[in-house]
Length: 219
Image (cartoon, rainbow, N blue to C red):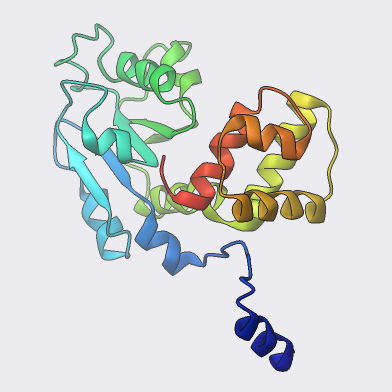
């Protein structure tokens, strides 16, 4: 194998291998934002646990706020935020708007209150909900889960298989998906048209979002 590798290197043949990331890699890549009108201890706990790109915003005056645009995971407190944008339902209104603006980000709502309108669309817009007083480990577990979904090759392949099956009625094995992803990686064209052509489906925007995030890290 080493001889073959040496020959390939000598001939200038480039290997295209999809990135496989461990937890330490994810901790350096993933960008997490908490929107909370009060400082929240979990932010510091995550940073100390190695999630270095974790930040806190008291509120935002625009959905295009740089930290929000770049974030992969956004935690939103129900109370006290969304006021600068005039949302009547505060955090729930904000998370509904974030879902419309950024359909592929991971959104989590949290609150110290146990009562309220559990049928508000803000809850359904979120990928998860958690009590504000939950053990910090529960917040870390959500961060790990969502990070792996976005950047772990195994999870990415499983996600693509699910989308292909549910949205297009296409059944591909893990090896077939990886083969197509490698072709995309080699080709360097991350447009939905190119990706749709490789997977032999039309309107492949959802596939393009998943693959682009996995390969480039851009939310």
